Image 1 (cartoon, rainbow, N blue to C red):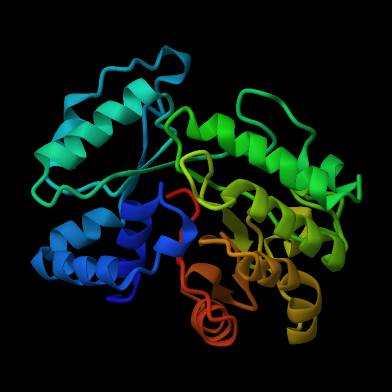
Image 2: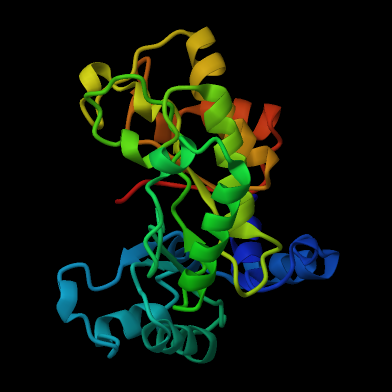
Length: 287
């Protein structure tokens, strides 16, 4: 657990700096000092993400609810989903960095899948272009638009290989081929993240892993596959995301061969950390 917190705070405190500054020893020392000051409740709070105004829909207002202000001041929120617009994110951030005990910035994420304001082709359509440079540029412009609205982090790209046409989320990915999926994944990660200036987004490769292999094409269903199929078909795009520098991954809803992905040591520790040397963090998928 201790390893997770430095990485999380590292991302929070350097999100608008260039990538080479992310592992500055001085920053690492400050992170360690900060962690030593935190209570257990504050550490748990940094792992808590709320969906902003999820019940309000189009009636959402820039005014921050008092309940959110209280949670932020108490260090009980680390990030928000769907807090969009500089009026909202600016006020939330102001409270975090001026009124909370440890002044830790908030992280703002949302689903930027095929455009933010400008609508781009869906990922499956982009993949059919066989042109990774166009895909990279698409992600780059999406990042520019989203970051201008106060967003730091996109829950994209979805890199699941899908071979059952009954599965309704095929449109979010790059199809059935691991090689094409890997190439498009790398392009999207590089487009979203760039050099991590203030016009880029942190990318999140999802859903780790084999989410597209659900039995019967039923979303969230179980996955029962061999080691060979896992490694040759479903894992290559995730490895491509890690190699391209993706800073976060999202674990999948499903279980693989009876083990939930969110608690799968082989996936999250042995492969991701051990074999691939991934040094970012993994988040859960929607509650």
